[in-house]
Structures are given as structure tokens and as C-alpha cells.
Length: 112
Image (cartoon, rainbow, N blue to C red; front, side):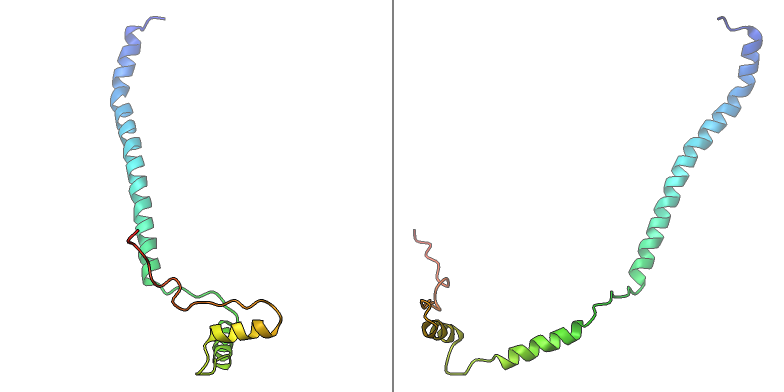
């Protein structure tokens, strides 16, 4: 199928319109990307300047108070260490006593 001269005349008059349309399409992609980045930046700024609401933790502070109360109630007598107390309890229960060295794991021999 050959191109006729009348077709060329019609195409040449439309070339500038096609060029402008293609340029607008390319600019549209760049413009859309710029708008999206601006929106993301705005959201990030709002997020950094806003106060976030905490999730409902329920009875979180009361749990901490209970835990602290248990720790205070479980204090060991000053003359006796907890490991000694555990060893004494296991001896009385009929189970084999586990003796733990308090210095175990504190010294590292790197001489080889």
C-alpha cells in the first residue's frame, strides 16, 4: 500500500499536534510522580508533627504494680542468697540438690 501525496499533506499538518500531545503525556507522568512524592512528604510531616494515640493496654500499669509488689514480697533474707535458698529447698524435697558456683561464667580463659 503506497502513500499518496494527499496523505502526506494531511500528515504534515498533524505532526505538530502529535508532538505536543506526546510531550504532554511525558510531562504528565513526571507531574504525577512529583505530586505523589509531595503528598508522601506531606503525610510524613503530618505524622512526625502529630501525636499518636496509644493503643488500649488494658490494665498495663496495674500489672506493673502487681509485679513490683510480688518482687517486694519475695525479697530474700539478707544473710541468705537465693541460690542457697533454692539448694536448701531441693534438698528437703527429696530431689537432688543442684549446687551453683556464683563465679561460674565470669572468668574467661583465653590462653588456650
